[in-house]
Length: 239
Image (cartoon, rainbow, N blue to C red; front, top):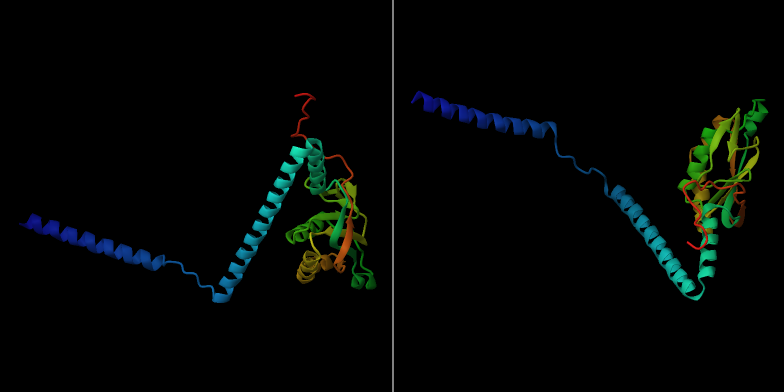
């Protein structure tokens, strides 16, 4: 009899202990809830819709390109190949870009000149931050002091001098040409760069960013050095 009572008592204690453990865990780890207001959710939705629209545009362009190449291949394989090569050169940056964009001038800050502060050349880190900021706004082509930025471009310090593609960037003032797809994109980039805190970072280094007005025809120089193709092999003729 006593053994049965002990078993029942133990079972009741286990049930009560389990319930207390569940309640404690619920209090310590409440279910997370989305506390954003309607406006924040609408902004997030707008960003997603914009991304979706951009992806659809890219898919449409690729489909048009594929259709064009299929037609060209059936008519003239050599012309299709040459067109593909030229398109790849353009995308890589081996050809000069002429189109919508703007010009940014990096110049000494007048306040620093007025009080006699030394104007050092732009640091690699600051230049990289600026290039990243420009690319964040969908730049199609960029050159720094006449040196085209491509996928393999290196911005580094060499013997105390800032270099792009192993070529020294001169002291301010110098220009950065930026090419984009449309004039509307150039206007958006202008407004976004004007509102960006990147200008304050330049001012700390006694430099100033003068962002030029968007134009229809900005010229971005071509990459004029050899391109590394260590992962590509030339197929012998006839194979």
